[in-house]
Image 1 (cartoon, one colour):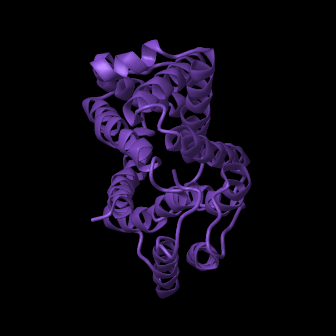
Image 2 (image 1 turned 90 degrees about the vertical axis):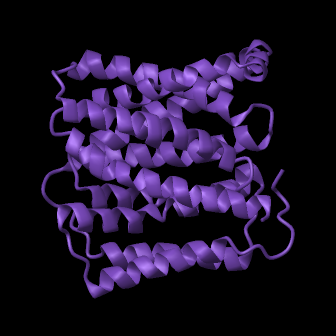
Image 3 (image 1 turned 180 degrees about the horizontal axis):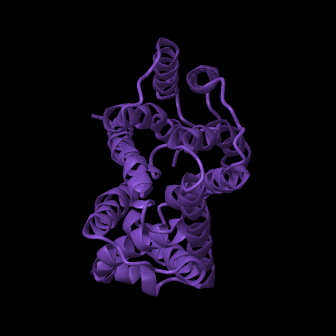
Length: 298
């Protein structure tokens, strides 16, 4: 099995796990304020990973850091955790999961275009076809979308999360493809900085209310499995997959979230929605077809 295929399969596993987050977050938001909830999740995940930072090789990398290294990983943590995840939780506090999922999946096309310019990762025409097929499937699934109801604040947070996800995906690919840092070091340092800022902001603005055993169970599950494990694996994946490939696989969560919503929340799927999901998944598969050399991969 090639390294690329292994990375693709691992990315699919991670997105399946991440898809469960949408259901768990909606349940947790019933008792935990959004920003505090996100801060708790990611800071506890950071604490779980922190002991690994003192392993010989990882600690050697940390000790060799200069100002530029700290600035690079601090900025990455601020974008991918504080802004992207914090804004996503705030959006979910105001909007349905499917609406937020739809808006965040617009990042695929932006990442593809930006990756060409910034990272010099040029997809083939077949892969471009897969991108647009994926977006067409998403559009068919969710349209007609109603933006009424006065939840304008939720849309603002969703678009902030969208912009941060685009920037974070490109930053993550740039940081990880260099091979300068191990995936674990990138995860621990960036998550520690980003989550600390998010938790302090959350408690300062929204407070820390009493949390039930179910609430803490959700926080811990999200922190250990969906965050500590999955984000470390995602940084490893970005050492192999291009920004566009990683973003497209991540976009399959649209279908996965819809399936979980159907199972756990009783929301049924129409024939049009099933066709749209199938089309989006076919688009993802097309993007992963390796035709010829992948010039930008390092």
